[in-house]
Amino acid sequence: MDCLSENLQKITDLLGCGDNFPEELKTCLERASDIVTELRSSSGSANDTSNESSMHRNKAKQEENPRETAGTGFYKMLLHLTRSKKVLLTQSSGSTGLALADVLPEDGRVTLCVSNDHHQEQVSPLATKIERKVGAISDILKELAASGEQFDMVFIDATERSHINYYNVIMSSNMLKMNGVMCVQNVFVRDRRSQENINDEQEREARKVTDLINSDPSLEQVILPIDGQTIVARRKLTHPSEFKEDVVFWGYRGLSILDRMRLDGKVAYVTGGGQGIGRAFAHALGEAGAKVAVVDMANEKAKAVTHELHLKGIKSVAIAADISKEEDVKRIVDTIVTNWGRIDIACNNAGINMNSASEVTTLQEWDATFNVNLRGLFMCCQAAGRIMLSQGYGKIINTASMASLIVPHPQKQLAYNTSKAGVVKLTQTLGTEWIDRGVRVNCISPGIVDTPLIHSDALKPLVQRWLNDIPAGRLAQVTDLQAAVVFLASEASDYMTGHNLVIEGGQSLW
Ligand SMILES: NC(=O)c1ccc[n+]([C@@H]2O[C@H](COP(=O)([O-])OP(=O)(O)OC[C@H]3O[C@@H](n4cnc5c(N)ncnc54)[C@H](O)[C@@H]3O)[C@@H](O)[C@H]2O)c1
Image 1 (spheres, protein in one colour):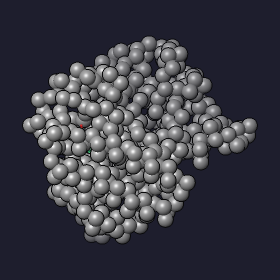
Image 2 (cartoon, protein in one colour):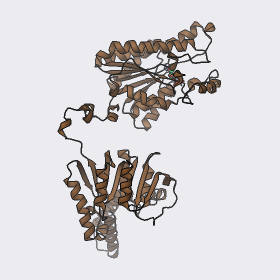
Image 3 (cartoon, protein in one colour):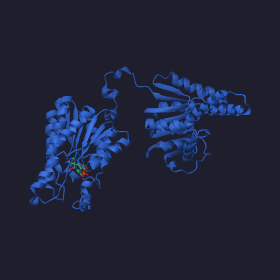
Image 4 (cartoon, helix red, strand yellow):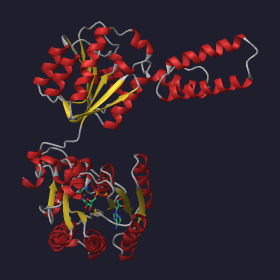
């Protein structure tokens, strides 16, 4: 792109010297310049001069990160696509490390191996994500291999003398993770200027690495003309044959355990999805790949959560409904089936808690609590269950409570505790009744979770007392429950039914 831009500029200058060039030629040239400008700006290059909006965009990018090149822009995109966390760079500049660190998550890390420390990088907040190792690179690599380090992405420069050895250490010690990607700088597709700087010996070294990759049947590669790179990944295993029928080796239905927990293409709903635990469930299910109907009697809250999901690229719909009303429950199920054709995952999570000493608990309180927590939940289970039974598959996950097991104190909540014990028994009963027709019913029993539910005037002052009863020493956060709902919603938990999954930091054990 640089060469192209340079040449277009030369032609423009030459044209400027004479008058007898056809107008059409100038127009074509302008058009070509515009295309180059656009391509350079979209690939992260920053020096165009013609297109004003691109110029502004590039200027902003350059100010954000003065070192970014077209190649770095591509690697950043690759890191993003592969969700890499750990990156190994051999013999690259610290500026590349900083640019890559920029796209890594909080717990991501770039390990930068350099043979000398001449190019100390300026201080950057991203530097905390970079681990600089100085010394003989082969020694550093052996040390990393011995300590069991593994990387999602490894960059090696095939023109360096010993890179064939680096390559061998990395591959033989499985330093590249199972689904990792290796980027090998490929001199044969580098731009003209870089090629001029490459001598015969470097070319021979580069060819050795390329030949080695070519001769390895377990690898696949693609050569990219960006920055002269060969991208290498492990081929999906097709052998060895001794594991032919072994589902542990190949993964059940050919899927790795984490892939078995994905919910791609599944249709889910979450009642009480507008805030607290339900909101966290909706996000978790959506992140795992499901489309999510967010059901809540507070329409604005349901809509706000669908907006959040939309921002993350998750398909969702808001349904305003009161699950204690039969007609609303019917409408929830009908709306989802009309929109998305099925229901795979039903999270019956909406619940309320009122506090009163048992001797003064009114029938209104009792009925209101049971109408939502148990009667409403049963109606949801039945309506979703009918769809799931007709599909021959479904996962129902009810939200019960640790209060189904122990009597939380000192607050008084007879109706709540009893309703939640009912949720567990309902779950066990449906779980056994429907499993042979493909419908699993389980429940999650959280301990005390830091949500608006416990922010009432009656409960707020009790937090310190509860903490003394919790071995984990803290209240649960909604994020502590997210993995459980995804697991129970996924096919990985298909053999579980009628289970009460208690997540309470050990509180019920004390
Ligand atoms: N927070 C805790 O400490 C805790 C502990 C154990 C179990 N739980 C259970 O987890 C579930 C969620 O609790 P939370 O803490 O997120 O509560 P929350 O009060 O923060 O949120 C509940 C949501 O449910 C909605 N809702 C209430 N009644 C409804 C109805 N009839 N129809 C539709 N939507 C309704 C509310 O509008 C609200 O958005 C409840 O079943 C609760 O009993 C909570």
